[in-house]
Image (cartoon, rainbow, N blue to C red; front, side, top):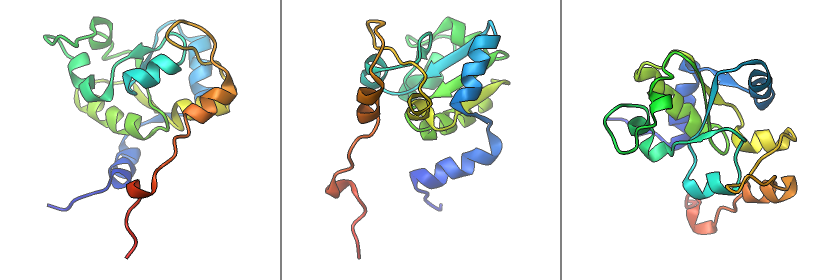
Length: 157
């Protein structure tokens, strides 16, 4: 079996999923009554900043959140298989892979938000914390730009 990197897996998913830019998502939020924004980042990430009205469903348990019979089941998400569902992560990579998975689970109107929550912040759209407070855009930018340590980089030959 040929192994693939994370970047290769994401690249393979892009031709078979649909993506929306943050400004497209903002237009849909304003125009439609039923848009499910599903933030698939980790709990700490979501609690620190998220799009108001989004649902938290961590990528690690997303499939269980989207199906009946699990402690993680989110009923309104299970019932949204034919509704517009937009998946959100930090940069649009995790959400691209998640969109592929939810397509396989029968979601018919599923999208990944291209550029993720970082792109949302870069577009000057508001973000809120777990207490519902508006998050400072500059603070959000720093939070959304983690530093990769030297030992996390591929060794050079």
